[in-house]
Image 1: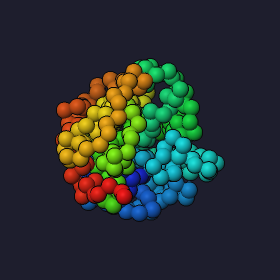
Image 2 (image 1 turned 90 degrees about the vertical axis):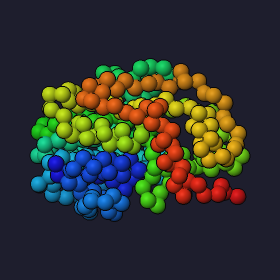
Image 3 (image 1 turned 135 degrees about the horizontal axis):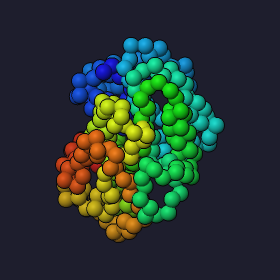
Length: 294
């Protein structure tokens, strides 16, 4: 397939770009800068500008999102109007430009579920109740896509994504590792995670699945429930660095996402079996092993 991909310069989109190329697709990254992925072309684009002509493409994968660096929830910063203009209005314009393609895949978020009580099992059949502007914008974009006639339309509600960062960037746990190595107190926390490779595999599956297998077009993407205590303990074993481990967190405060729909398409995430090797890959990067801040 010939695929237009937004967000390929970010950590999540970088993994998607690598996965698509590895599966033999022709990929053009739509963005302000080229993607640092071999074999990926470049198509200049910005969420606030008019989309380019997508004639000749088979599919769009929309993973771009404009936000305050390092934040998704709360990513609007001091500019909620601009945040909505870029991420909702810009997304709807892009969907309209892609309505004659075979398929559109939108990277949504577990944030659309919002304020369900801790411990709620989050299935795709639950009515979204976003309680942040980020979740609200993601859900409104999902609705706009679902109401569009023409292409097979898929929204992937992804949890937090981990993995090595693109060249020149830091992975999501770098600041946490620095804090730990500096001897600072690390707060206890537990969260759902999925590796970038597994998210890319989900994108590949929904791009190529038979239309009748896509159902309502909404799929949860989640794998591990990860405690910071376990993460940093494993990090210490690999690196030899010591620090103050946070207390073991209460896993019942996390609402797990069901992934039966995606698994029915053949999705098999790495789980605990792959986690250690994947973490080792992340911390073997020279940037990850730099001395902690003074």
